[in-house]
Image (cartoon, rainbow, N blue to C red; front, side):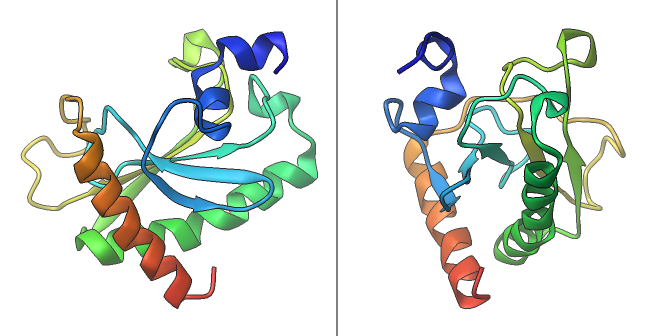
Length: 146
């Protein structure tokens, strides 16, 4: 493990050093449930190779990553019955990137939310609940041949 991966929490999740609720995985990307979800179903898509920001990634890999987003979003909102979602990707501390490893947030939204357009407060989620939801979303992806 190189020095960056030694310090990067997402690299440790990719290497399965830190347990998580995995939604989807292929040879280049991993999708897992956010431990501090903005909303139920909040998932993160990360490249398995470490890149600090999207500017560090090869353009082709960025395209492959974003090609997964609508498939993942469809599976997530289908399983949890949300009526909208946000896609968010921050680059650098000034842009509120907390973990310096490229990641795309897929955040389900609901029309019944009281704070229209704003983020609800985040709370830590229980890993078993996240794993159960990840399994349901994963099953939906499999049924859609993703």
